[in-house]
Image: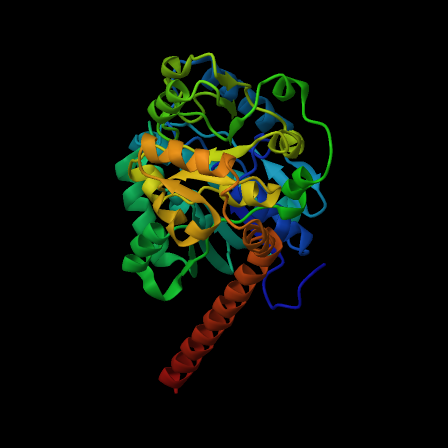
Length: 411
């Protein structure tokens, strides 16, 4: 249903994730919510920020990108189109960046002309798009900062740092999903920076609360089950923690659902090759509630490093929506939600927290459900559009004053 706000109805969204990734993140949810609100959205798939490796997965992804680029735009739902432009994935190289800029400018102009976009809102998760902005006669610029990309493996850290400073300074609105990211952007442009934590698709994940089947591959694993859903990569997941807990409590069974090495192809999982650690691989987004239904404890075994210090794990509210008690490493962003989960800062405290939950001493289930019902994408989109509406009014007012000053100067 379209809003009554005086915003452009067109949005060009630069994502850092492909549309059909099995685990939706902010990018797909925001694009889908905007389309549901009546905005017309061009979702630009990842431009390949991470330097590619010779791994077969990276080579396969390059092949898929070429095929999609040749297919052109594809409409994935009402008001929402996905584009896969070709770009050289060596963003730390100046020559590669310059060539990408020329190619992408032409691609953007062509797609906006095709869709008849009029002064679109530019909404980006990718800080390296700054040089492309001149190709778009935009009405607003939104930077949605959801991760410290410079701290992820194989990233052009220096180029990202420099580009993010310029982007945050130019943006009409900066959204940050953690307090650390908020502080970093506020130091650049405090007037336009807003902290908005990650949220979840409550309607989807709350299906886990209803009676239903547990998938066979999960049902065959003994209980109690400690579950994790997400990217199984060394810079995100603390494999040493999992191995320590698994060895200390062989009667507990870890269930890890996700792609091994996502974002870090050189990830080694040798340390968790244990009888009570089960790697099921990625599962379709639509099936995740069925798997969560079979978890006794939902976990966030995050490795402590600069990347995780800046992240807000989206799976936290997904777990709460599913009605599963949560035990997590002491991720800074979760401290303000400590009433809704058990936080642990060592393998020993993690074991104690899981034991308490399994003994029935879980965080208050009613409070957790109330929190999950509040932190939804519908609620978050309403907040975002209010902020964008105010930014549009502010920009219009500034433009009006500038015109008045120019007119007076000409008298």
